[in-house]
Structure formats: C-alpha cells, structure tokens
Amino acid sequence: MDTKEFLKLLSNGSSVSGYEFKLNDNIISVFKSYADHVIVDKLDNVIAIKKGINNQSNLKIMLSAHMDEIGLMVKYIEDNGFIRFTNIGGIDPRTILGQEVIVHGIKDCYGVIGSKPPHLQEASEINKTIKMEDMIIDIGYSRKEVEKLIRIGDPITIKRDFKSLQGNRLVGKSLDDKAGVAALYECIKELSNMKHEADIYFVSTVQEEVGMRGAFTSTYKINPDIGIAIDVGFGSTPELLKADTLDMGKGPGITIGGNIHPGLRERIVQIAKEYNIPFQFEVTPGPTGTDGRAMQITREGIPTLCLSIPLRYMHTSVEIIDMNDLKNTAKLLAFFIASISNENLEGLLCY
Image 1 (cartoon, rainbow, N blue to C red):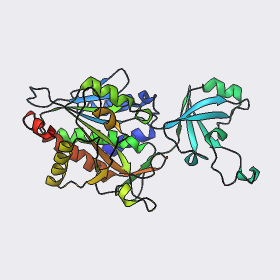
Image 2 (cartoon, one colour; image 1 turned 180 degrees about the horizontal axis):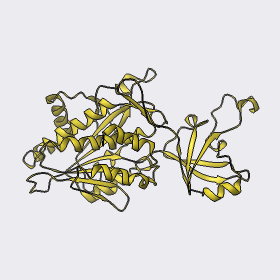
Image 3 (tube, rainbow, N blue to C red; image 1 turned 120 degrees about the vertical axis):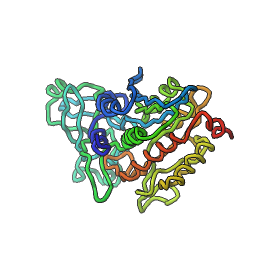
Image 4 (tube, rainbow, N blue to C red; image 1 turned 45 degrees about the horizontal axis):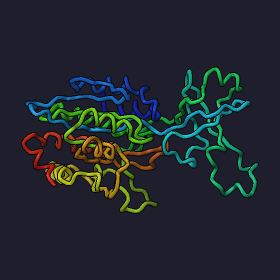
C-alpha cells in the first residue's frame, strides 16, 4: 500500500486512547508484507519485527510511534436525549464547539456538538470560553432511542476526512501521531532494499496520550539496545516563536535534551549530513512528552532518540503535515539503522 493511502486509512479511522484495537487489523495487514512476523501484546501494542542479517549478538533497535488519538467519551445521557461528555487526552474545548462527531456505540452515530446560542447568553457569558461541561452532543434521538445505541463510556471522535492541501501538505485529524506510524511503514519499506544487522521492532503503541503506557510495557518486553520515538513537533505559524517550532518541509526535528542519548544524536546528525537528508534541531531540556520518555527510563535505562515530524495545529481536527517531512524521517531512520552494528554500538553509547 502507498504510504499516503495508509496514512489516510489511519487518520479517518478511530483509535481513541484505550480503544486502539479498532485499527489493529489495518496496521497488521500493511506491515506483514515487509515484516518477518507481527504480534499484538497484552496491552494491544502492534509489534512488527524485521530480522537483521548475521545478528549473532541479538542486537535490537525499537522504533515507536503511538497509534492512539485524543477524543471524547460519553459521560451521561440527559432525559431529552442530549449526551454529556468528557475528554480522553488533551483537548482544548475552544476547538470542539460546533464540530461534527461520531459516537462509537453499538453502531456509529453521527452527531454535533452544541451549546447555548450567543443570542441567549447573558452579557457576562459572551466573552468567556464555553466549558466542556456546558456543551452537549445532539444525535437527534430521544433518550429512549439513544440508550438503544449508546452506552456510558463509549468513545467519540471528531468527524473529519483526510485531504490533500496544496503542494505536499496533508490535513486530517489525529496526524499526531498517525503520521509517525506511517513513517514506520515508510521506513520498513526503505529497509526492505537495505542490509541491516540489528533486528528492528516497529511498534505502534497504545495510550500515549494518557501516559505513554504502551511504550512502557512494549519497551520492557523488547528490551532494545536503542529506542527511537517518532512523534510530531510544533510546526511554525506566524504567532509562534521561531525558537519553539519546526519549519514545515525542512525535514524532521532531531531532539536535543536530557531524554536523548548524546552519542546516538551525534550519529544520526552525521548520517543526515552524509546522505543529504534535511533536518532541524528541536530543543527539549526535560522529558519530551513522547514515547521516548518511557523508553529511556524502562528497565535499567534504554539509550534513546526522538524524531519529530513538523505538524501544525496540534490536538485539533485540522492537523497539517508535509509528506516530504514524513518521507525524510523514514529515510533518516533507515540509513541510521543500516549504520548500526555490534562492532560500533559500544563506542556510540559511550558518554
């Protein structure tokens, strides 16, 4: 499958944290064409394994991108059939009012998010942000009809179709971090034409948005020699400081900070320069807030890297990436992996 089509499949799908299993079959079906085998662990992480050549020392590199997305959850059904809801993961209430949604109940139900019209608001309310608890979802049914289809705890996603903008820009929901999962897929395709010594574990992790839970458990299971998290970074827009963002179309951000192993970072920068792969630096002095955080502090510690695909309008339903950034992320990963061997690993990991 073409990587862009795979990303479209992921973005249009539903995988709210805790309910990622809805995407498992799609992820398994594309990775199994290139992996030696694919497994699903007890927490529902999908792990595709590609064996290396002459790997007598069991050298392992783990690549991680989370397949879960932020979303909403049914909290209460009013007597008039309106649905009260809460959030799963970091949602800004300002971005959801008036949105179309899908309530994933016994069957998917289309609805809209509404609140008190501005015409009926008190003067003191007009300039205030509407709170999530003051919003409702209207699917058009009475309570009796709603309860036949929807239960307390059912997940809800924003209804948004993945589309192409101008040039190489793509827009859709949950590109954080389904763009990372697509980069893993592009990477395994790149590696199918390259020689690499290490066994590579491509992990689509669960529940990153609510605590990096899938990365903790899968890293513990795999116990890799190197862990690499692929996530997204803040794409530059006019209102954001240049120092806090990544430019779209100029390659992945290579993270610098305490979460990152300095020797491995120097190596991946060297590889990027050697193969003329565009890249940027992303400065994160503390925890990255990605799967890389979980990788680094699992077991006795895993040497970790983090690559960020520039993304605009994070945690909204109109996230934007540049397809060239995704492809360059995958290419950089592939060449870096091909450069790692049992012979040079110890030297790279020395402080």
